[in-house]
Image 1: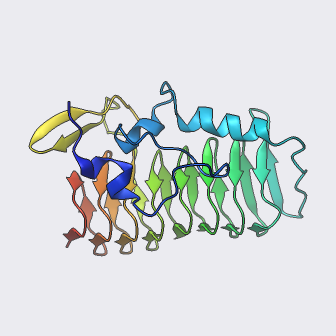
Image 2: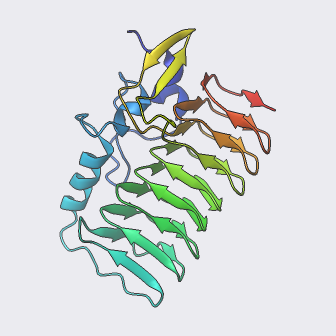
Amino acid sequence: MQWPSYTQISSLFSSFDNENVASQPYFNPSLPVWDILDPNSENSLKSQLQDLINSIDSPSKFEQVGVTIDDSNGPVIIDPTAIIEPSTHFIGPCYIGADAQIRHGAYIRENSWICSDAVVGHCSEIKHSILLPGAKAPHFNYVGDSILGKGVNLGAGVKLSNLRNDGTEVFLRIDGERVASGLRKFGAILGEDSQLGCNAVTNPGTILGCNSVVWPNVTVTGVHPAQSIHR
C-alpha cells in the first residue's frame, strides 16, 4: 500500500538527522517508521545496533558500584559522558549515548538504543526500543518495542503496551483501513515533542504525531496525526 506521510520519518521525526550519524539509528524514509522494529528488516534495530557495536574497536569496560551488566548475549556500550546512577541493570546488546542519563533503579534490556541526552529514570524499563535524542522516560515507565522522538516526555507511570492480550499480530487503523503491522510485539511510536500525562497507557500499535498531548489516566489506541489531544 502507499504509506501516508504521517507514518514516515519526515513527519514523525522531522528534525532528526537521518544521515551520517554513527551513534543514531537510520530510518528508511520510504517505509513506515515501525519497519525498524521488525527483526527481519534490512534496517532492523537489532542489526543496526550490532553494526554500531562492531564499529567500536575497543569498547571500554564500565565499572561502577551498584551497576550490574549482563553481556552474555551481547555487549553493553556506554558512552563515557553518559551519567549512570547506582542500582541500574543492563542487558546487552544495548547502547547508551553521549550525555544520556540512566537514573537509579532503571532496567535497560536487550536491543535498546538510548541516544544522546535521553533520560531513563527511576524504575523505568526499556526493551527493544529507541529513545531519540532528548527523549525522556523518567519515572516508573514501561517502554517496549517502541520509538520515542526528540523532546517526548512520559509522565510518571506511563506504559507503552507492546503485546495484545491474545498474543497475535498487531494491526493499525490507517485511513479507516485495518492494516497488518507484521509484528507480534509493537508498542508505540511517539512523534517529536509529544507529552503523555501520568498513568496514561498506549495500546499496542499506537502512533502519535508531533506535539500530541495525552491527558493523565487516559488509554490511547490507533494512528493519530500531529497535535492530537486525548482526554
